[in-house]
Image 1 (tube, rainbow, N blue to C red):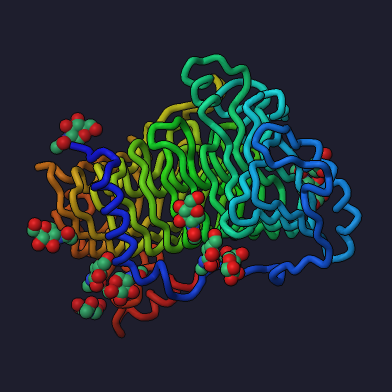
Image 2: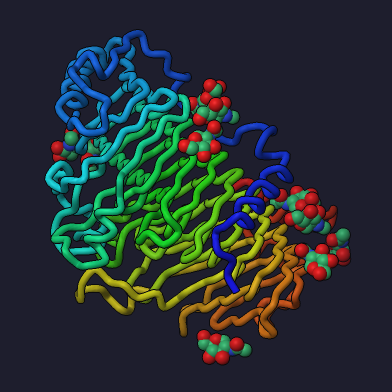
Length: 466
Ligand SMILES: *[C@@H]1O[C@H](CO)[C@@H](O)[C@H](O)[C@H]1NC(C)=O
Ligand SMILES: *[C@@H]1O[C@H](CO)[C@@H](O)[C@H](O)[C@H]1NC(C)=O
Ligand SMILES: *[C@@H]1O[C@H](CO)[C@@H](O)[C@H](O)[C@H]1NC(C)=O
Ligand SMILES: *[C@@H]1O[C@H](CO)[C@@H](O)[C@H](O)[C@H]1NC(C)=O
Ligand SMILES: *[C@@H]1O[C@H](CO)[C@@H](O)[C@H](O)[C@H]1NC(C)=O
Ligand SMILES: *[C@@H]1O[C@H](CO)[C@@H](O)[C@H](O)[C@H]1NC(C)=O
Ligand SMILES: *[C@@H]1O[C@H](CO)[C@@H](O)[C@H](O)[C@H]1NC(C)=O
Ligand SMILES: *[C@@H]1O[C@H](CO)[C@@H](O)[C@H](O)[C@H]1NC(C)=O
Ligand SMILES: *[C@@H]1O[C@H](CO)[C@@H](O)[C@H](O)[C@H]1NC(C)=O
Ligand SMILES: *[C@@H]1O[C@H](CO)[C@@H](O)[C@H](O)[C@H]1NC(C)=O
Ligand SMILES: *[C@@H]1O[C@H](CO)[C@@H](O)[C@H](O)[C@H]1NC(C)=O
């Protein structure tokens, strides 16, 4: 029986947090490329006529403020300060060398009129909107072709007021794909930190075709049953670092993507070098960390560690399908604690969902070198449901030190999977039972060094320097 989110859930969260020294201390894995931007110029949104009463529409004030700040782009950039208040707005565009700062008790509210979210072209790597043909509504906070952008503050809130969009989606009354809360496209040097994001109409934070993105110390929430409210979706982006985040939404907490079927294959921009560090969250319908299902441009070098999911459907998931092409390789996920999770690890090779009828069913994804280690789980139903694709076996899947308290009497179910394991309980499926040590270290991606000893050190160290 799933636990409902009641006092029990709240107590569980408190217990989880209080047990986790790394949430409070420890060093950061995210390195900023631009020095912590101190902007020489700052303006307050009220100087542009904004009214923080939650009723007045402030789209023009945001646009005018940013237009004005554009004159400081080559003078060290500028800050737009949003004070306490409820600032209703439609979609607005950011510029380079800008800091958007939300003070404590500042809330940016997304307009509930869809006309305030203009329709823009579909992404070339998707060919059409993700939900409907044609264009898509532009995100509330949008940026394109930018460099050095910081969205931060003192735990202010960006609220998409998504309820109305979820209802339109469920009643099939929309003509275009729902908007994200924040989307940055073809941009680099992005920092999103120290804020709370709630009730996104669709995916919450979507960096696409971006480089050097940091998302740090943010809280993302949406109701557990809200449709497609993914937390953070790095998409065809590289050098992305996500750290110290708490995410509780109605879909995947983090979903790493790179385009959809023939559009993603021809656009050919992979997602690469994605770091996830110290993530806590829950999702009753989906996965804590997902890769796919759109992965046609390829996904590689994903490193996730110190992860906790509770009250969730799935812990770690890879989703793909014939027609996707692309690859998912060199994935390393370690130090995971799962509590009350239905399926700890899930691979789905026949996910389906195609943009149109023009995909090539022969375009098979390559899934290989996936290492998952140091996992503990309590109150787990299935340890692993690992389904590869016929004639397209998922290779070098390595499980090390995985200990799960499982209720199902067939805890593992694997098809078209090949790999190795050590210290997995309950005993894993036949196709993963061959031991990693000592002959298969080099087949596994980036194993922790404690398994390496003098006789296989050389093979090991080559592995560690990807
Ligand atoms: C990306 O942005 C750069 C400028 O920052 C621009 O030169 C380039 O054409 C843009 N590419 C796309 C696909 O938008
Ligand atoms: C971004 O760059 C692309 C390609 O150069 C261009 O077509 C587009 O208009 C630019 N968009 C913005 C908002 O600057
Ligand atoms: C996280 O953000 C809050 C404000 O949202 C701030 O008070 C706190 O110091 C931040 N913690 C870290 C480690 O940056
Ligand atoms: C920020 O505010 C949210 C509620 O809006 C709260 O849940 C969260 O704990 C706060 N984060 C920090 C770091 O204070
Ligand atoms: C978050 O806020 C804390 C406290 O003000 C500050 O020290 C830290 O640099 C901020 N982090 C980021 C990434 O903005
Ligand atoms: C991976 O990305 C991080 C930023 O998150 C960067 O510091 C690091 O140099 C990148 N590593 C490689 C091998 O590109
Ligand atoms: C196995 O993983 C758990 C936590 O994930 C860790 O505490 C334990 O030390 C690990 N054991 C070994 C032998 O690595
Ligand atoms: C699994 O359950 C047993 C007995 O109920 C308990 O001793 C053990 O600590 C649990 N293990 C984990 C990893 O939660
Ligand atoms: C494994 O999964 C397949 C289909 O995915 C199902 O037909 C089969 O019954 C399952 N086996 C066990 C032992 O649960
Ligand atoms: C070290 O490697 C040797 C041979 O490769 C193997 O027999 C031995 O079990 C390994 N020791 C450990 C602790 O893994
Ligand atoms: C797994 O846990 C062991 C024991 O705590 C630790 O030595 C090792 O570094 C961990 N592995 C990773 C990849 O963190």
